[in-house]
Length: 361
Ligand code: AHG
Ligand code: MN
Ligand code: MN
Image 1 (cartoon, rainbow, N blue to C red):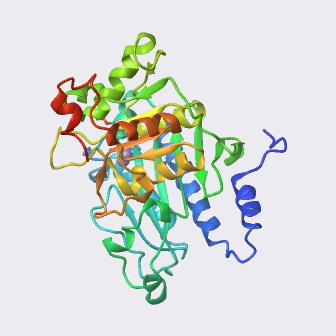
Image 2 (cartoon, rainbow, N blue to C red):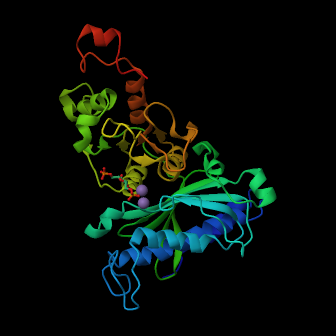
Image 3 (cartoon, helix red, strand yellow):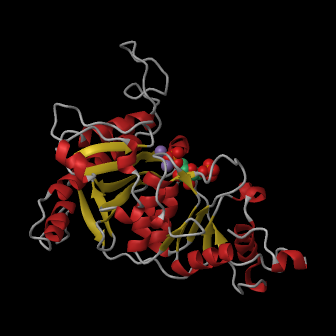
């Protein structure tokens, strides 16, 4: 297959870099290494769950008598190995590692930090539904760059607005790499014949309005009133306050939901709820909410905790969880408005609730 005039990821990155003559090319190098990890994972994921001889099931023992690793751990290792050697990174952090990951002493240390969820929606592997990988690139604090010291948790606790680049790969019927370097969102599709990611969409825009929402309704009894109000109004359809019918989707693979929303609009919610009072949400801020939030905002969408823009949240922990709402701008803004408004009469008709909301921030 020929390129037919289409751009490879490499060419796209080089042409982007030309806009910044002083840029060293390190960011490009880093993004290309990440893309190599994506290619490698696309191959592995396409072979299905870890059931064959090459990749036995989690906990199984291979012919050498070694206990095999689950796919989550294998993906994590691929990410680490593909990125630790380059000299572009001061350190890494991942969903699969409790502590920050140090660049081994045998390699130079660099000026960026890489944070990732190596396999998102991994339970979907068993049922052959799309999964993905998510990444976020931050600048290493100046002191890390200057001294080359080991990274610590605090180095990663930067708001999403500080991201230099972010994106994800989706391993679906096709493998696609969605990237933002803060100049819009571009989509690259893996051309298996060329072994290259090829630019297939540029300046992606999330439609501002939608009639499609995604939420795990089995949690509805734990939802806070603003979320319940929003969903009830969607479900009421044409005869309700929204005056239009809504459609619902839930893939249980955030990357897949995000990709659908990026392509055709919609709203995704995994809000803070009362299911587990110790957790302020299900999804993780640093390697799920922030990178997806950056992509959404760069595509003209919006990402929020329900209460404030996700990208403005100052993280307090590496594996911090957070309520997350993203997608079509007008819907996300509506959900935020519901969080800030006193509870509506339709939800709590008692005058006590209408005048003195028990549910305000
Ligand atoms: P991960 O596989 O990285 O742990 O993430 C799974 C996440 C996310 O992709 C998805 O939106 C959510 O979990 C699904 O949660 P429920 O099973 O509660 O629906
Ligand atoms: Mn995940
Ligand atoms: Mn994961």
